[in-house]
Picture 1: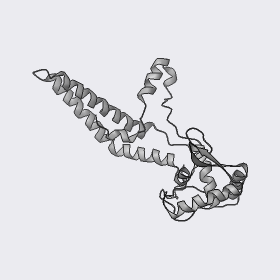
Picture 2 (picture 1 turned 180 degrees about the vertical axis):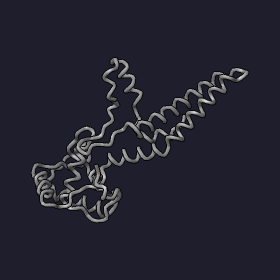
Picture 3 (picture 1 turned 90 degrees about the vertical axis):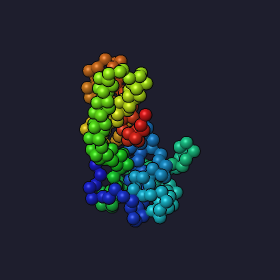
Picture 4 (picture 1 turned 45 degrees about the vertical axis):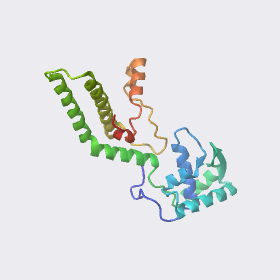
Amino acid sequence: MPDPDRPHTTRAQAPSDALILAAIERAARHHPKGARAIPAWTILEHLGIRERSPGARHVRSRLPALCAAGSLERARRHGVAAWELTGLGLRRLRRARRGGEDVLLPEAPQHQVWRIARTTAEQEIERFRADVRARLAHANKLLDAGEPPPSDAWFELAEQLRWSCRRLASASYCLSEWREPDDDRADVDERLDPHDERLAPQERARRRARRAGRRNLRLWDQRP
């Protein structure tokens, strides 16, 4: 959980070295693939600092210094410089926490993604439900038409109805089923449900495949 007294916006002041170490520690903990070396842009994201700002320049200047001091180790990931906490850096961070130094981070990026998805779903779900109702009503009109509609009308409606239902399913998941992320681990959608273990393997696989993209809000506006 983020500190409720911490803003979700960019920090105005330059972060301390201990806070930079804390951001790297959390970024590694939240990395979906368990990477320990973190690029600068991700560190800035966890600090709540914009890429092109005085705070960002300060952080980038401190990373080599922390490396020289033995708190960080420099690595490369896919050709990009990345920074990993050393044992010395972790001990330094622990001392800072025990000493009462301010190392509280702003809202984690993964928590912000969850919060925005939940809020957006809450705002949009009734509109999405109305859209599905309208398309079902149109299907009934086609069924009751005196002259059978051409096949293309059904093909088009099938695409539209599938998209509308998937959008509603995604919003329903974001609003009611996506659990608030735990700050101790990465929030990765494994596309699993607690009841899946009761299903046959083939049905489990089908359901997991259907759940692909259920957290992707960008798909809500990609009309067929």
